[in-house]
Image (cartoon, rainbow, N blue to C red; front, side, top):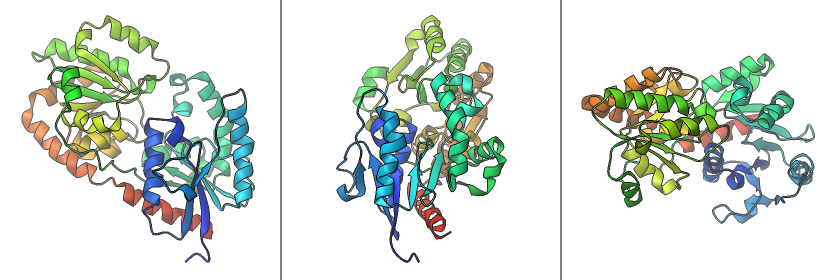
Length: 373
């Protein structure tokens, strides 16, 4: 037992400045920690208040849009506030910090992936540069590093072997609001009732979408069926080559880009897809896989990085650098109804292994260990 309540602050800016994976991670983490019967007092530090979380557990430090303020806030204003609050542990869910803290405050950094280090050419220059300058120091100053897969933990250790004894892996959970449901009217109108393959994620080079476009062309050339290819997600960076390939695609009229979709549309989007296609060159975890499997949707995945960990035996795998391999898996799932049913059943079983409640419990236990060291 802890002698007295300990104060842990989670730097929760992703709740306010992101809409993709790290946003959902942070939201689920702080939501579930609020339900854990813990000796620890958890607080979240963020840019604006939210009625979803207790007011007395939110520390608000606004962000103003003038040159240099973001750096000032990160390197001076936030650390000053944390020192004043006499916190015991600071957790950074976005893996870029925390910075400028006294040694008595223990640092926890969450690493979702190391793509800016492993695949720098797939990222914007400033992102590569910041990671090269700061990441090794961040990791060495951290008392605990949390990864979301064994593959990511292995990558961190390869990047810096001195970190081995302070890395733990905790699998992410599934959104329990995302389960099988009928297609929403909005999606019916958008897709005109046609069957479709689905990609869900940001349009950026790591997702390997130019290979997916080529695979879809090969699939259509070899198939009598004409399902749509739906690409759901926001535009990211370095996607000029993708949009050029899309513009020239022989089946462009059957490729739909939805843009960012609100969460309430994701369950019907996954549920009615022939399969989720994730041809990523690298994933630290792959939340869309768990979400699709929660709806009983078959998954066609790259055989790389963490995806075999997450998909297990409930998915088909292909070589992401080979469009013919991707197309082969598309043909297989599209023509074999018994395979679709079998994978659907396995998908539900696999998805049940990923629970945010369990994530929060393990997280809380590890923070207690850290405080008591």
